[in-house]
Length: 373
Image (tube, rainbow, N blue to C red; front, side, top):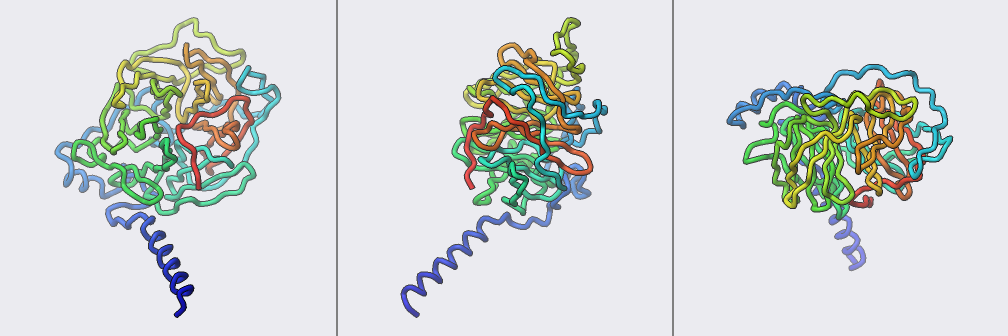
């Protein structure tokens, strides 16, 4: 055999080895497409591996999203998709939502921006899908165990939060476990709350809502529970100093003179804020805004974009006051920037199918890393 043929054969074998190495090992304990809280083997797993099982957390106001298995929210008014009123620096007058894609595979929390669109972690299908602005799609990973949330660290490494029994966070490529324990016990011991939303910080760690607020540092060491909220949507400020979590703190009530944008509905949720410490822990839990129920995005100016009462709300990062609001597609559970220069805002809706809608913005989305195929 010639040297050229030998080199070609070696290259072929090497590629095959890499492909196998990047696959997640089969795990007979876990069932793809089934969240841990619904797995009939969970009780036996907890009894075997946990010193003391945590009770199910009580849901805070606006803290139960679709990822957390919450009930359907009150139906908002019918979505008419009229051209929006201008919001300075955010969106031009007359812009409309447009449906980009619709398909199966729900519970797509914490999407990631790509140059062409967004990445979705499809809980039911145990796969990661890129949805592009032109409506085309590509499967990025197909062997996750009920992967339902994504995080991208500053160096561009993609992680998926897996919700199957023995939940954990896995690096997508090459496939490697990042963390599935806290204080020497499985994350499953923290209670049946689903591993809901994820967001990375600029230190290589990531925050997650999981029946409470937790933090996994760059080495995969998990700490928490922080604060009182069970939480749902989660976001980090552009300066990495503030963590935002959707929900209302116990006993928190909006003021009687709460000022809302003209024509905006009465909000039902809220955003709590926390001060991020150098080690990633958070302190000073406080009610920051009165709007917010799930997936929340941040732009490069620090403004927050969150769903509530059938509308998109844009929140001032300094005061917590709404800068503007307009109707979102029916069933929207989260907003996320993506596309060229991250100047497209995507709305993810859940119903019989998952839908992705898009609207062009003047603002630019913030993300700590850049995803590269």
